[in-house]
Length: 67
Length: 347
Ligand SMILES: [Zn+2]
Image 1: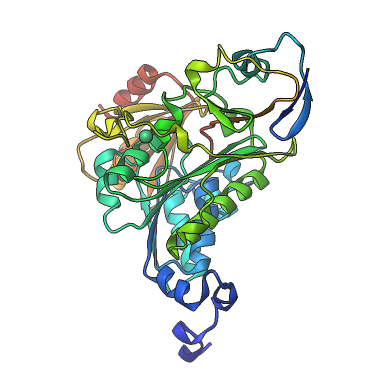
Image 2: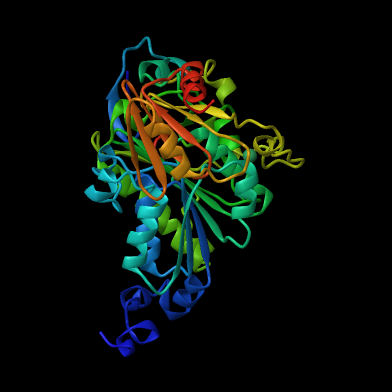
């Protein structure tokens, strides 16, 4: 499937079909991640149950501690 | 230069005053503001230099560490001699900043902020800038800023990635709303590395928002959580207003300021990714560095000192003692081992 991830066209395996799986795929599992799907924030508790589809626009913002 | 060429007669802020959103009026506002910068690492030094050049009336910059060679690649206020002499960052930063602008008030403080200290430091402060490198201190800043109704600007970076968010008490969600939990570990600049342009980018976001707040141009604020990866050519800004929770223990309807109420700060801390343990003595007395150096010179190992600290090397460890009572023990991540070493030397 193809979607827009952080502004860039990104090809994903079809098996990556929920927000949680996408976060794992992006190696952000251990991070605090804010997810925006097509303009709406998806709460942490809904990551598992929210599926993603071809053409979705997703922004993933993860927090880091450095500085 | 004669006295006439100094002070109010010069036109050092003319280019900033020509920028209409600031103007002469904005410059006069800036002149009366006090900004507190927590941390004088990469972000803290970058923000400090921008704000000092911009003519903020008073800048206080606080840091617990001293300058090392590995800092010079991105911590823009420091020089090789600061690293060679192991000058505390707050001292080296203050000196450099005073050379940049002698017309404003600049204070560098060598200390590790706890909630008591922070509550004293924020008195009269208009804005707090995050220049720290860990979530514990940021959550402490968050609670303090909310309690005293002071805006603060989060910034962080690692590798080629950075992000920033401006927290306005009573309006935006706070860092606790955004994080929900304290993130554990993860990549740090000491484990994943960092390139300096990322620092500059975060600093640019932080100090631009700072200028907007200081000239009181609130409509111009970004109102978005911004992040970018300069190497991957990614850039994202999202609205997070909906993340604000009325049940948030830091900014909700019945705030408890959990990071101020609980004594979360331990007397000993492992400094993340640095193979270093910090031990803090809570006696509230200044350490007599001269006496300490004399004691240590009687032991095997090498003693070096400057006016701010004593460094004692006994391979594979190095202990750095500060006046404020803290000790950094390099060469271990084990608090017990660090304490054993400390007590063996100092009883
Ligand atoms: Zn909150």
